[in-house]
Length: 506
Ligand SMILES: [Zn+2]
Image 1 (tube, rainbow, N blue to C red):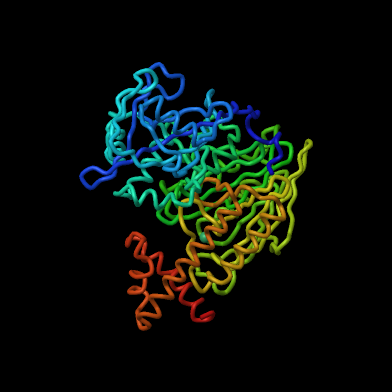
Image 2: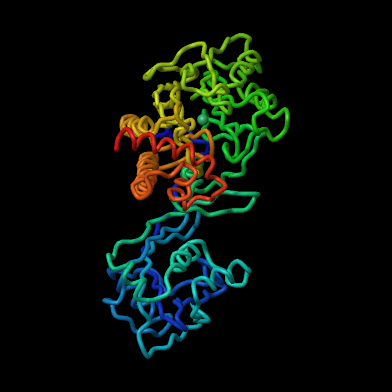
């Protein structure tokens, strides 16, 4: 749990929600699935002029199903049987809206022999539409819809029959339960569900969902995530580094600062030739005491890879003044590649602790040795706030490469288990990766990551059993057939790690 006073903004309690129910009435026309939509009144207080599915608030002691049936009659003169309803999904209105609903979305086949007639009060223009057509018209700005409607329709594009949809909803368990969050990209609001990659960052920075956090990547300034945690992304974006390497700046002018992963130095995938020097200077500028003097107390490298550790020495040289920061991390192992050599001033061991304190704030960072991506990889936990700084072991928006022999798949999976245990021990909810936005739902994210790896391994195993003599470049086409072939040369490194593991743990 984040200490509440360290959030950037004061928390504002979102408006209370009212229970509501919505029905997606379905039919088939010319071999395609269609759904019934209506346009809301331009004077409606919620979602005016938007195309929606019929529905409304739950009255008195009605059930959700009873409300759905009643609204179909009131709004469209359609007599529906309770038994025909299947629960599809659960949406809760965004936290920043003045009117909020807790809505069950149902599906039902359109009853035979009935015709929808709009009440012309709340609902207009009953329209049967193919989900893909509605989405295309929305793209063309001819069919206004709100985010939950769009995401719901996207789910339906995979079906072409009513019976297939009903079968998929047979369990009466919602396919998702979501309260979307919005952030700004290029100054415009964009909306995200819980499984979308920026969701965790929006939850961390704006828990109440009122303020709009900008998700745009910038190399020019440190982005505040909490009062004592900032991220400065280096100007080294690439296929391997995503938006660039994230350096985390932990601390305040009162506590002094710790910099995690200062980044590349030298000509490593830089957007401009001096992006590395500019990054080091910006790190220094972001770590100043109230009197203006640089105050870096420690420099941490999660691992020795060339996009993480080389800037440690130049930053240390620049920062040397009143405080002489030491470089912490694990020395590279003999298995590392030549460009990944790294020798810290202080050799970090599993469980080591670094602390900052000043004013009324204490910050404790604890090391967790997590071999797998690199043999000398160390994650760090900010214990008081349950934050995991994951280096390259866990990324957001891309999959980390396991490159043998320094990378090892069995170690990687065991380290994930170690991080799961740390999540429980330290009540960790957020992961700060070296590439990509903050991840939320930390424990679930790790569980999914492990399942993804094991799923890939099962594919590799199956292909190896079917055709034992395949070379790696043939095997990659089978085991990574769902991945863009452009990425296969990189995927082959992780594939080698899977093959190595399968040979030792058949
Ligand atoms: Zn790395």
